[in-house]
Amino acid sequence: MNASLLRSVIYIAALCGLYLSTAMLVPAMVDLYYGHSDWRVFATCAFMVGGISLMAAMATRGPPPIFSRRLGFLLVNVLWAVFALVGAIPFMFSSPHLSFAQALFEAMSGITTTGSSVISGLDTMPPGLLMWRSLIAWLGGIGIVALGLFVLPFLRVGGMSFFKMESSDTNDKPFARLATFTRAFMAIYVGITLLCAIAYDSAGMSHFDAINHAFSTVATAGFSTHDASFGYFQSDAILWIATFFMTLCSLPFSILIVFAVRGRLDALRDPQILVFLGYVSAFAISTAIYNHLANGVAMTDALTHSYFNFASLLSTTGFASQDYLLWGPFVVMAAFFATFMGGCSGSTAGGIKAYRFVILFNVITTGLKKLIYPNAVYSVRYGKQTVDAETQRTIFLFFSVFTFLWVIGSLAMAALGYDFTTAASAVITALANVGPGVSTLIGPSGNFATMNDPELYLLALMMLLGRLEVLSVLVLLVPIFWRT
Image (cartoon, rainbow, N blue to C red; front, top):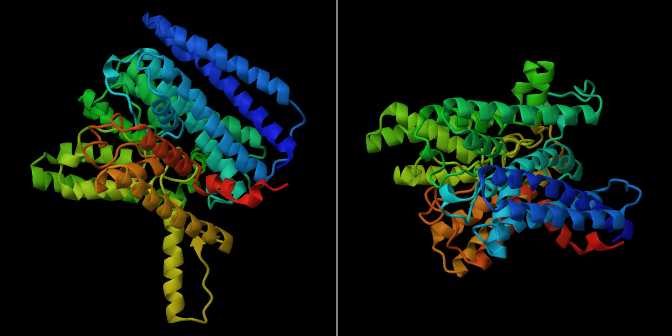
């Protein structure tokens, strides 16, 4: 491994630490405003992390390296690890006094926008701590979109390149410079967050709840300020507002930017958008009908809660309005399968993602046609674009490794003493960055507080693997990666 490469990675990670130390001042000010003594914890952590990061940055400062795949893989892993480690520090020293494993789990859940939690009694937690959970999730969402739009397509392990999508012809780039696109993305991300917070506030949330839930909704993270999540508010209007914004933020941000800035309606014809919206509606309507017929719930209430909870699952947000595991076995099974699926590429959502299902379906239909006409030439399409063999190979590799990790992780959880449902759903909800599982222990009415350190470390690793599209983490295990 080139020494200058390691120096550059440490330098960029140190800058990340500086940004996070500055962000810690936000919950410090929140605690100070509400008169809670934990403001000292965040202030101390901010100066400590900032000082160490500044020294590391000064010691490793140098000319920027040429961006390569090796640098990209290493940088992505180091940045997310640093983000999780730094984010965990306030959790250990603030009022809940979490252990290192619990703090790392909570921070990793935040930055990967998973939304799983080991903290109980959220209604009585210090406001600064609640703000820190929401803030790291919101910042993690920014990094995730940047990862999906710029880094992963370059590394050829995931994401859909912005300039290769059906809605964006390479001969007619909607933004000539990357800086222009980045500014547009930040404006859209911040703008959607403000609109979401205003909508929540207008619908009856307190100012504090509205800001925290807006951060978590736009990042599709699922962190709430109440143990009952959205069930606390008892408001259909709030549920529909959340459903809209969770669905919106599961769409590709590149498409949203092209549509918002240039007004190009053709941008919305991306196949993955139609597929994602289609399976959200299919899950929601079918479970609403089942809940209405099986449990006698009024159809309007059934639709409201079904759309909210399945938009939450499929966007990998993880909010809940009710314990949908009590609706019946059909809903439990639907929720389990929904955990795998995820949103669109280039969004804050996790999971397998809709564009992979589109390409996989076209590969299968093309293969079936070849069985009938072996000598015919068929191409695999994504909209109007032809999918090259390398992309097809990467998608099949992703499906294979994703399934393998789920099986191995589930077996490990079972070996640690958990039943099949808890083990299987805990691993998939971490790997897909969803949040709640489908067992009583870790379902929408539970959390991960009762789990021991080995399980928390395992699930934190699964969150990281899922968020970084699996392959970009596992590539570090290949010996040739470290050879000069």
